[in-house]
Image 1 (cartoon, one colour):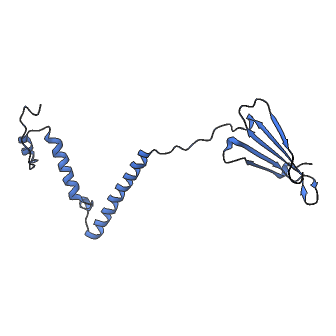
Image 2 (cartoon, one colour):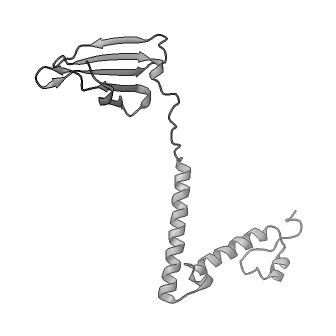
Image 3 (cartoon, rainbow, N blue to C red):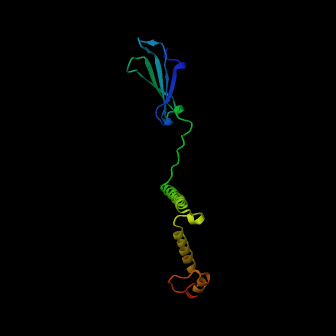
Length: 170
């Protein structure tokens, strides 16, 4: 006997399941003094094959192993393994910036609370700079839409710019 089902080993040819698999039946009758007969079937995936192709190879060692190579479309997996989508460079940059921003904000807030005892908005790192940036952005955005008088009335003057006339705002 050339192997039994009780001593069957199955493995993929490689990490890619589309390559096929190997079935080995061990534990056959005695072959020589210290070996037993075994049979190895290599099932190779070949979608182009319409009929079964079987080739046998002699065992280069003791002659105690029958080796068969079977090329068939039946050995191909029923489905293709899903590939894991990867992130593009833009998403990686975005994620890194968000993480750095969170680290800056969280670390700065923790530092100001522990060292200075700050609370609320005052614990935000560089809060005065961020307030100034907000004022500049708001004022610059509104300067294009309002007259100088309207800006003075709203308390948003103080820069050295000339007042716009009604004709320039159109």
